[in-house]
Amino acid sequence: MARIIYKNGCEGQNRLECIEGIEIDLLNGQKALIYPKYSNEELLDLKDRDRWLDAGISEIAALRLRDNQAATAALLEAGSPAARFVTKFTSERFGRFGLPTLLAAMEITEQEGEIDKLAREIDGADLLEDFSSSVWSCSRCNPNGGWVADGVYGCANGVYLGNRYVAAPLVLLDTTADGVA
Image 1 (cartoon, rainbow, N blue to C red):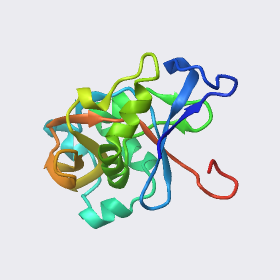
Image 2: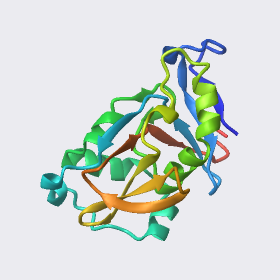
Image 3: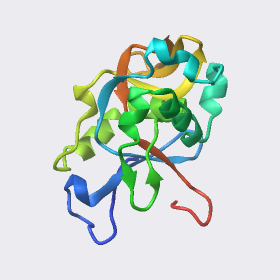
């Protein structure tokens, strides 16, 4: 179930500057915070592919990934337009946003309706429905491709790095006893 997370002292104020983001549950038990500003971006220009030192991982390994910060940082270092976009955003309580893991990207496409329903209540928020139906993950599938969640077919695909898909700012939340949940 999706819900708006407000900044401290801003409860009920539905303006972009008053929210931390929209929280969703992930299939693996994690929670994710999505900042409702999106951009259709390349994951990486092909001329920069050798700067991204990740060799690529299988789909199942990408689905098991539980941390997006290191992979986003590696993409940012390599010159990724998608990583540059998502890291512009920071949550006061939860830190820097990054590109979603593949599982989180798939959950974004699966829960698009719920996310957009809440985003419609927030002045200044973008709607996912206004962007590409596929969402980049922070994972590489091969030297020329990255993993995306395909919102039309509900599956993961390995696609060319230079394609433009949704860069969705996301923080994976700590769900331990001392964490958010």
